[in-house]
Length: 110
Image (cartoon, rainbow, N blue to C red):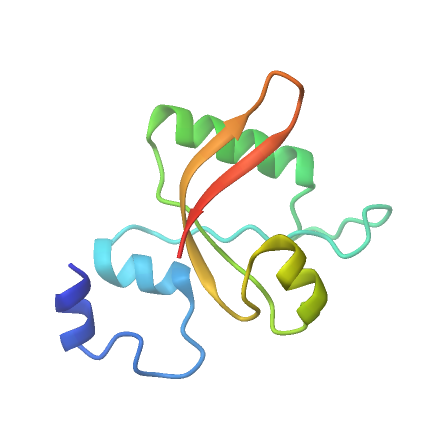
């Protein structure tokens, strides 16, 4: 699939979005989760983090979705290095994990 996508011109254009790329590869209808900037004032189009986690964990458990995440360009270099991520980059989510101690993890693949 990746080779076919690359031959078709994927990744070769600025502003690529992992959700749109997934839709192009699979034909699935894209759903995007937007997190609020201010937890005290969540806008209509934003998803509270707790609700987003519940949906991601449930869908992943039942195998009902393909998940990608992306970092923003305004993520500081220090924070990116602390998290082991790259700014302005997309990652595939391999697993959604809820540990017994309450820790929540996303297993990512570059």
